[in-house]
Length: 170
Image (cartoon, rainbow, N blue to C red):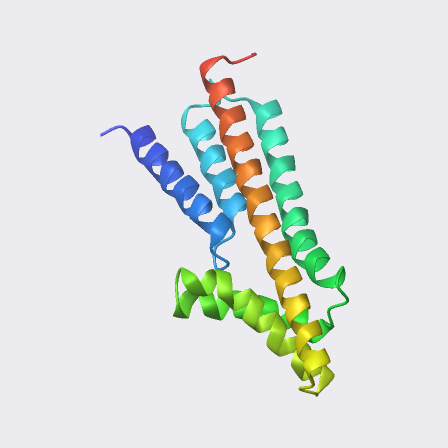
């Protein structure tokens, strides 16, 4: 058996795991996609996809890391979330994703942000509950926006790779 087949298989597994990781918090989604594309190009001896395209894909991967952090923080901070709410959203995403997958993946950040904000406020008045709920929703929307943006970046990365593979400029 040709070793390039094994490398391409590993590359495909990494890309698939990366696409899953765009949605699941436990996997570094787009870095895995990039690693898979890099291995695929390497296994081919860089005959189809060259260094210039790999630099572009690497930069898109870096952009995705910034988008990931920015979207979650922006959703929470825009509504005045406390640090506890932000930590609660991250913990809620992790715990919810593993305990009640897939529903927990969507409810976890909301519940975590809500709980974190209520712990920060140390009060259960109706006004505090309303504000904490608003912050939980904002945090969830920020995370959902981040996932959507990362999916778009993943699609762009795969599309650019495919175009360069089939129609190399070099």
